[in-house]
Length: 227
Image 1 (tube, one colour):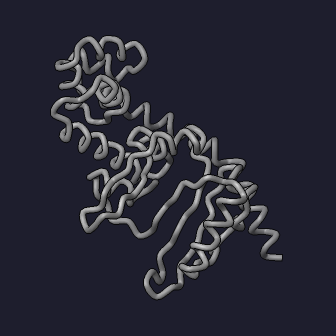
Image 2 (image 1 turned 180 degrees about the vertical axis):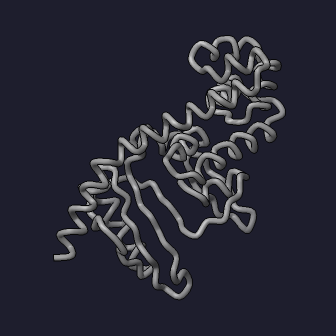
Image 3 (image 1 turned 90 degrees about the vertical axis):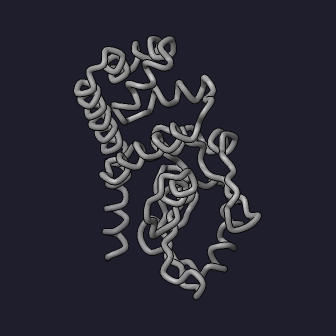
């Protein structure tokens, strides 16, 4: 669900870990525990690897010691801010075949990955932009659903301007709910950039607000562990 998924979608970034969104139920976590033991993966921070913490939205962090993956960090989550429950994410998943063989990797759908990247982290916002740009150039004949996705999520003023010219009807409808699209229809790219900055600031605020109670709980767990 993180940097590796971005690489598979063609918006490459150097990734030093692997992030996974997982189904949080006892049977699945028991199976996952078997895989983690094979990787010789140990929890490296709070919270502990328990169902209750995953259900609340915490990430559980591991470091692998098996020689084949020594030092690899693995982060597990089950709840993503602003995203649908796991079952819906799984139903919308995209399966990508690796170039090196027959392996197929299930990743978040592109819209779900974009939503997951709307965080406080500075590095995530350029990645959202690159994901949308890569998707835009890869479609010669986009579906209406794809066009609406681009109009709803694109963060490149020039691309928004082209979308408004090429898909005027869809842009007219989207303009009522997204100010950046309304500005792009008028050709004012400076105003588009200003509205995009406002969107980013609002999403960063929402992410900070979402994590406040979770961070307080982590601080409490750290305090208890240090006693």
